[in-house]
Image 1: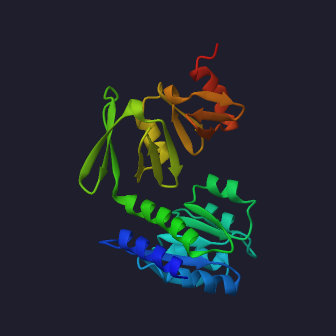
Image 2: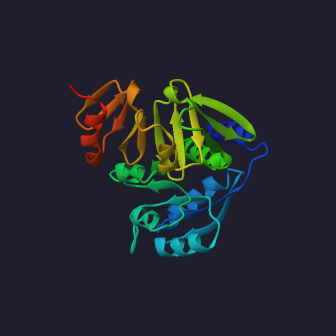
Length: 253
């Protein structure tokens, strides 16, 4: 138990200085699971638990009418699954799945969720998931300043600070709902913009969407094996519908 308190102290010291509150709800048909999760949520000062729902229908109706930033969501529930719930939301909050089932992980991450925790939950793992969600939440004020087509850079704007990123250094871009992660060789920038929006502004001769969740810099692809492209040691899935055009783009001999 002292170990958990130490982790919480470090976590809250890092994140609670001038931080915004995140309104969250938890959705689980198991009462004991809701109680355990509620106890974890109350230990994080920037989380405000607005509602507990025992089924996805109630959660759907609540999210439609109230401003919710984060949802802790089980998957297998009566009436509607957690996966079906987020697929039916027009405006999607940040999602953390907390479930007893491992087999939905791939489908969940294709929906660009922040994290996927397999029960039982412990505090250190919970803190990791919440920190990822907080990073996304804090990035909502970030913007990308995209220049004319002949420019070789973009700017990432965050809290009045502008950071130049050379387009040639962008290795790949990963979608996270209404956010993206922009990866260079040594940094990651989390930005509040959709993958489609940033893809449209980048030169199509240098970038290609390999998957619904990834745009890659073609010059950074080192190897391709079946349905996976490798950028350094990073495996990037190749969607079946994108494979044919990729071969054309790569000028395969």
